[in-house]
Length: 234
Image 1 (cartoon, rainbow, N blue to C red):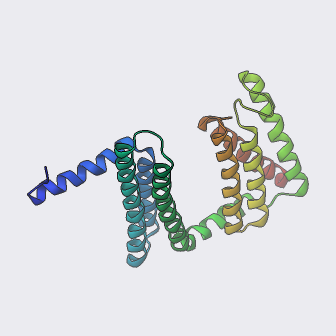
Image 2 (image 1 turned 90 degrees about the horizontal axis):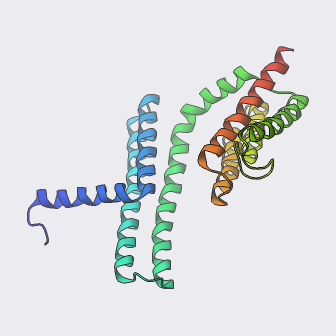
């Protein structure tokens, strides 16, 4: 029945949000990202206008995800069996969420970069630049470490599967070397995005789990930073 009181309408709306958060993992991810983003904005003491823009962008993503869930529920109700038009409807609704998330990412970058980039630049400067030999040694040591760890855990092969992900380890090792040698926050960010895309591809292909990918990434970063500091000390 259609609610007749305002409070009943609000409760129905809250039920819809809770249903989406309970059934859609992407909604939970959006909520988590929103909390991190807004908390970071408060921590960095962004201006009131910048915070309002971030809040509006976050709200737009959550709004798009709610509509996407509503479209999926209606499509499943009307067409429980597979139908190409039903697929198109779901894909278009998901595309709306992607567009909203992409726009929010741009807004977040434009606002937060001027606060975060100076901090990142100081951190990179503290570690220092690595030499050409150090970069080569880092990659070789990462490969050796991956093989040893896979042998110790008895899982996967040097090129596929197992703990840790070798592709993730090498990708983040290279991204770390690029970041340290350029000392440029934007180039560092782009390098890390590329490394993350490599990790994502391993997850999509179901070759590795999230734990294996994260372990590989941390292995690559730790060894590369350690080798860079060691070469500077000598």
